[in-house]
Image 1 (tube, rainbow, N blue to C red):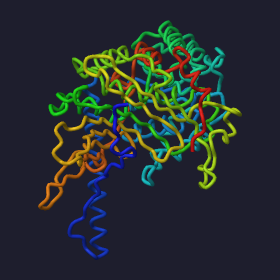
Image 2 (image 1 turned 180 degrees about the vertical axis):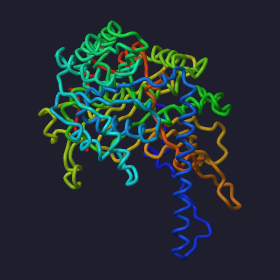
Image 3 (image 1 turned 120 degrees about the horizontal axis):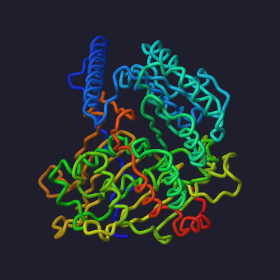
Image 4 (image 1 turned 135 degrees about the horizontal axis):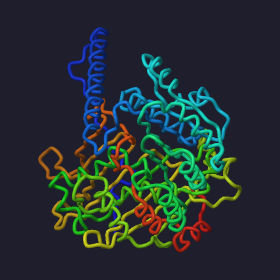
Length: 512
């Protein structure tokens, strides 16, 4: 396929900390530990101060003294306990949200705030000195039980929210951590019964946005009939990751990459997402969408568009999204012969979860053919990328946890090193251990002219120790969101357009 992987598993280097002049005394070790903790604390404080300063330069600031109500629909779910509540807690802890903010959870389950806390607490990473602060955080939380399709339940939710809206200006933000099949009913009820009377209303929707191009367009048409574009945010949380956004800085902030960022110099691009665990009891949800709709047509396609897009006129979110849409419009539908699908099975010699295959999960329908692994070859048919394969690869229950973009360059013409030269690679590692590194050839020490592969490595954990990522959904910093036309374009490329993936499901085979 025109791409030679110099190291498929690509064990990238994490630069360790070298301690010089180490002392053998325990007193010396304690002193160094204290200094390290102080340095990390100071770095964290500086990072928070910089974040607060940067928030003042966003396009829209919140009104002083206004009340903000953050409503989590699907508060009893996996996404809420693992991602949303931990993020809200860290924002609260670091003073990065408005002071007058109230959190309201909403779900079908009959729960209390204590139940929500018990489910989320293992993911909050609360330090001993933060226990009083986390108690104060949950005092600002409330919970309402109700269905997503009953107007009277949303009327009850509105009554609960109204109890806290005593200020002259009160804003409402609804975060839909819900399966797509209840998007329409829940948003219709929000529009009919829960819109803010004394401020703005915003609705955030998590991917996936429909199963295919048709259902995505149907959902987009429904949402556009309910809300203005500035009231609606379609989020792919991967776009908020530091290294994904750093793709733009690498490309357009460095002269050295620009001239080679094209089909004349680049052989292929590999975008990978690997998880070492299976469905973990979430098989009912996963089986309805599969790895293609859950990961490939969202996370991976978004990263591809950032790699392939042309330079936007500014860093304003709308200008970036315009360029990403242009890339997607240049991509033909993926063909069945350019795909590989698989489903993980148990390893009889493994330990723990490794012994269980996808079909061993009791929440997975019996005999399911849903893919848990997918590899697809995509092309961008424009002047810059004609003929360059973009490989999108994702899967569950694999050998490691990794998400990265690997850009492999062509062979050096006129080789004078007797075949020892390997292809250069630029690797942007999103997780774990954020890093950017370049695989390049260098002369080995000594009298001979032997060369070896080495790395220029920027590991964020070392260079930016103490820095923290914060997501701010209170402002119009919309780079992490995308409009309806971008979502529909993606579904036409990767999805069941022409029933390609539905045909492929019949050919899935178990793979160890």
